[in-house]
Length: 186
Image (cartoon, rainbow, N blue to C red):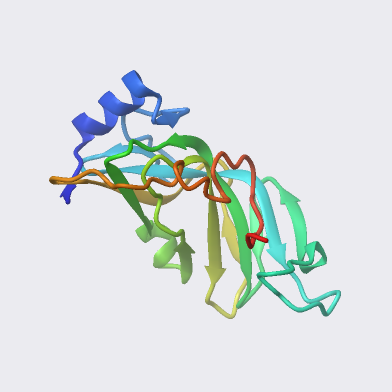
């Protein structure tokens, strides 16, 4: 699998609506950067957050998620020490069939003890990316809404295109809008 360049990313966003809204250059001044980089796309975090809380003393169960586990925040977000938040990308993605994207955190946040986790963005998946953010520090951590949070690296198939894409299997997170909580097929 080859890594896709800024030229490829711009073409796919402009001509095939792969990323919307799309920023064709890095936006950097006075903010945590986002937009196209040499071999990736820096995504923004929206202003919607779900911060995990122990106020209700519920169990975090991925098969039966209790929404009392989270507090909804709008705007910039303060994640408590050693805590966790769910959020989403500003951008909506429509992945091509022959491409997989891997997401890594931005160094600005990583140097503050903020870890970003996103599962692989599969071929023909589309939607807002649900982003998991962990504050590994013993201090509260601020996350800036509508600024950069992570970078996607696009990997293209060298030879064979996948037999079954995310859309083909009707993946449970296909077409997600907003922050999407855990689901288990029943």
